[in-house]
Image 1 (cartoon, rainbow, N blue to C red):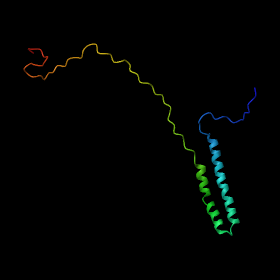
Image 2 (cartoon, one colour):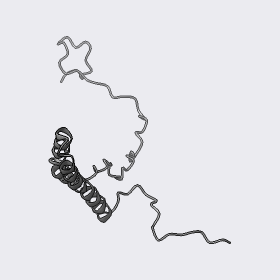
Image 3 (tube, rainbow, N blue to C red):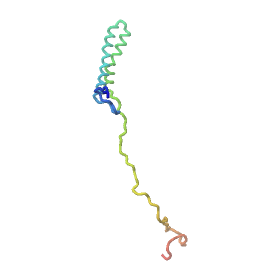
Image 4 (cartoon, rainbow, N blue to C red):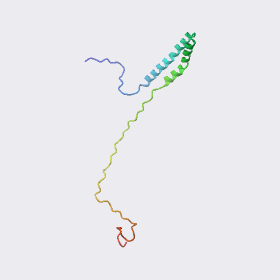
Amino acid sequence: MEERDRSGDPVLITEAAPSYDDELAARKRKYMFTMGMRFPCLILAGIFYQTWWLALALLVLSIPLPWVAVLIANDRPPRKSEEANRYQRQHRKIEAAPEPAIEPHQVIDVDAPADGQGTDRPAGG
């Protein structure tokens, strides 16, 4: 069997976010790149001082670069909105409702007319 070419980097097999150290290193690189653009803009503005509009444009471009660099460096990627995997048990009845073995009970009306018709009240009582 041939041995596969293996590098020292682990393979990402989940959708886990990058580690804090990796994320911080990426943000530092972005900051250094953005701040590194300011110095060349100032140098080019000095070189092109005779073309006033180009020098002014490079100077105006270099002014907000530190602010933009800090905003980009402090910006973390948004967190994933994940729902927690919670256990949900199935609700079961303890017993099934039994079929009535006898017929439904008979309702006796107490407020029946005085003539005795329509009541199940015993006579003489």
